[in-house]
Length: 420
Image 1 (cartoon, rainbow, N blue to C red):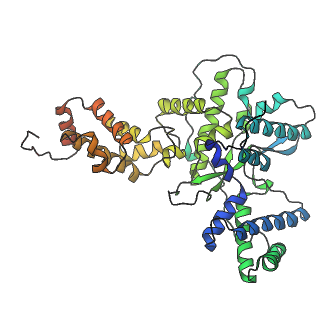
Image 2 (cartoon, rainbow, N blue to C red; image 1 turned 120 degrees about the vertical axis):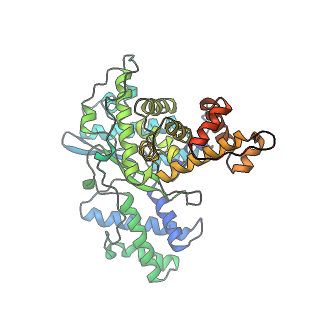
Image 3 (spheres, helix red, strand yellow; image 1 turned 180 degrees about the vertical axis):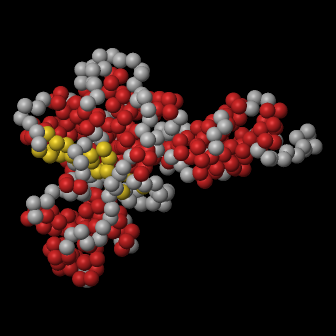
């Protein structure tokens, strides 16, 4: 049977722009006000990358591309790709994600074998895909004893620095843009300098990272609906720490514990670099299923009362956890705005906005406004309003309890002619 190809799975579509060239083009289009499908931007990015690679090859320098994990084996540094050009091309052609991940696994294994000829596929799984190991069934006591102290997490985020690559190294790219693409010399120089700045921002020198780390292109926390989806920013993530390697991996419980530790670390590291990871990012990096990821996030919240910062909880991208509902629950349990903001990685202003909406729903419920009118009155969607109404029913089952709470909040209620 012939495998079906040509249809890109929409769930993995965002991975297609997780490459340096796509980020370069997005920044060039914004900076130089270029067309959406600018061939000049494309050429500037490709020519600049070629010029940098040629220049640094003579200097004996090597860079890591986004989604490449740096490890050390037998005293040699090795690079394991979690995404590469071949994988991206296969995804664009509609190859199944399972087939793509298997190809990447083969590529990773080849790199490991180059450093350690005695390595087996199981050795690779111990490093990057522990769920593939033969494991005994474990229990559900997999959470760490203490949560990660985010204040102690040190990150050395990527900085966008102009001039890291000398202008003479970019001369071949400038010349081609002038001679082949008709740009003025000053335009070509400015464009290649900008493209080089983004390139070195996304692709650090190997010497800049520690074994166990990778750069991932993530959504910035300032992202809005008007932001170009290609304006990702590189963040340094520690996927495998020296302490991780010492953890036992005999049961499914052990693997969940490791994944939880990795999950809290990489989400916190991204957050401290002003970025957040999507559900798909976390699944792809940690090699876990959507079901397992959701169970880890929910168990972590239930144990520690902390919502880890993800695109779903910070940017409302997806529905990893319904953080607006959790804000209300935490407030009703007696926590202050400041305490809630620390627990959910949101600003106090955002927390207050959520609580103000809940109070509006409470008032509208008190005065008997029908559900059909609430979206128009509040400007919010029906599903979110239904969440809030469910909370009202849960916490204020009677009119007296509702009235008492609103009074405590300093809201003066007026009776209408109908009794309210």
